[in-house]
Image 1 (cartoon, rainbow, N blue to C red):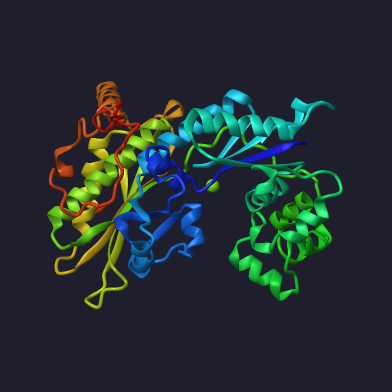
Image 2 (image 1 turned 45 degrees about the vertical axis):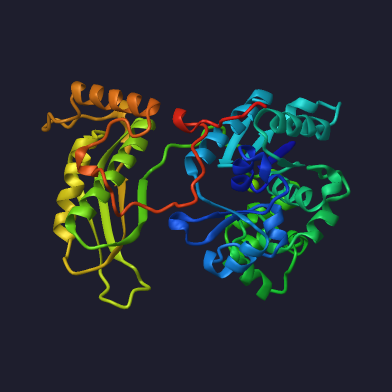
Length: 422
Ligand SMILES: [Mg+2]
């Protein structure tokens, strides 16, 4: 097999830079929800030793000193860029597994039957991406997914390969010895500690342990990893992402929330958002879970509660979902607490096209309800803040604060990039 892992470099920062060419070569950082911590950095910001996950106030001095550009996270922009990125990859080859917002595995196996070079092809992909959507990309090519991941990391570390590194026969040992355990796909921090305690430190050390012994001491997943490190493909490409089994929408508030009314607005908005996602994968939900909680960092009283609410029938109707979510909220709300976060989870999902009607129950989403929801979705697809339930509220004082948000260049006509021609 020949697998390529394509991974955009510093994706969030690169997306912001596409629309801000004045920030080329300039350090950029992106903040988490509510502008709390630094969650992404451009290469220049990394070079200033600005740490990942650091609260922004701790980096304030470096930010001012070096005039670092600071952005709130703009997920609608990153999502829109991701879609473009993936469709460009798919225009090269149909065998694409979208692995994350900025990563995809490509199966190049049948493309190079004995001829031509995969590296050249990789370079073509990089050039096209840079030209069509302005995103820099690194590509690692290897006989297995796990090795392709490592090769990608190697390409990022070694600029002399110009963004594309292919593991050539005979180079495997060199690559594995250069990679710490923590870089191996599927080896998280905990597992990495356990392996270190056994005296291992590099991917090479792990690859040298007989797979059967690994299975005995750990599990079959790590055994697969070891086999893959040795060039034996065990993890197939998944061409289509499976539908989600649960849909979650939860967020921290910009400030503490006390009243039932504010919580109702938040729960109603989160439920509406989750219901939209539910319909986009054409599923129905049979149960809804909601939670509210105070902040563990607050000194005052602590309170956290969640509740599962069974729905009368599997539904994708926002109105029914919100109505039940609010019923659940009323049941768990306690006045007198400073709430910091709330969330909604839709569960018991099934494919709406395969709904089994219960012999005794005649209830399911009516045709008119489905038509209404489709219409609402179609309108909201075209217009931001098009149609929403009044229970979502209009002021939304609790809403996440994102003071450094860049415009939604790609999804809002009013925020489209203006270019001045002199
Ligand atoms: Mg990346």
